[in-house]
Length: 394
Picture 1: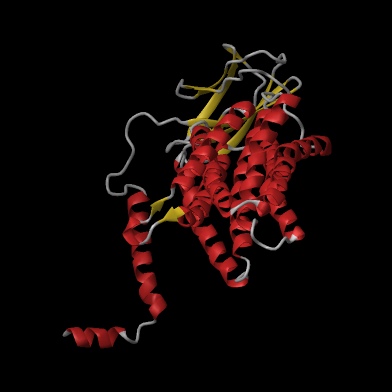
Picture 2: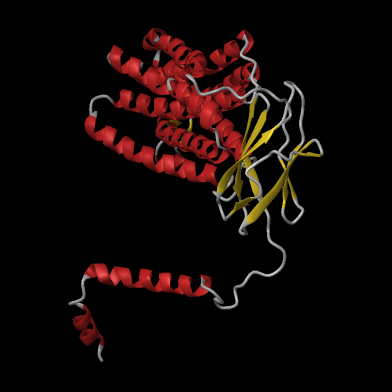
């Protein structure tokens, strides 16, 4: 049969069916390979046991462990050990977990606040999964009092500092063009530091939790997702706000900062839930100084725009309020994969904003365009400022 004849024969086949044929063949291949006796792919040797302890909850007289099977084989947890002592009342035992399956173990134990405990999960093959508790502290309940406290902390470290930083707007409106260029470059430095900080923190957190969902790769996935999504938002804003270029950039900056503050809130909430966060005045002051500079980054693009108070209020909430949501999620439902993805999401959003701002800091024309001395100085100053205030918040 000639090629034109084959094309004519296929022309009557629905397009959707042509798209479905490779998918059906791929599914059939997977069924053959994964089915009983599939192509010699039977697993040999001892099972691979990899259990991640996603969360440890301490209540009076009780230790509760949230676990997930991170490996390719089924795992059976046979015993719970605390400081080399078996806990016969722990349950439900034995606990069998299939691939990616999650479970919960409850063990009666009179733990003492402030003490350290070596907790282990003994599997049916004799392996031990370690789940140490460095400092025992009661896990707070997700009641109105706890959520109110976390919300207040989020306002202290997110909404209020960003709002204070936005009060630089009158100064920026009176400043000369060179000062505005420096402030925009300072903004790029601030955002670059936030992105680097979130990336490092996300990779560290990802390494502590379940690796089956991607581990540190979740930071990259989150960053790419945010970069593409924010590019779409930018295109939408360009179409709706033709005469408000400065507010468009400020909205993108506030979005990136808000996603970073969401990750910051996650860290605060999870640390408080684990009893590792001292909510003292010095800590609040440190975060306030660190985040006040973010307000300057938001108002820099609108320094030459007509003042619109309600949009400015909205920008402040967009940047600061996610810290409140982050403290709630971190205190009640913190998981390492979720935190890694959200921190990566913030990195991607900030990177997209920096791409928007950098062209305005270049000088020259054609292939000789490069970063101006004023722009380079502003970026370096932004990095140094965030590093200095970060030391206070550490």
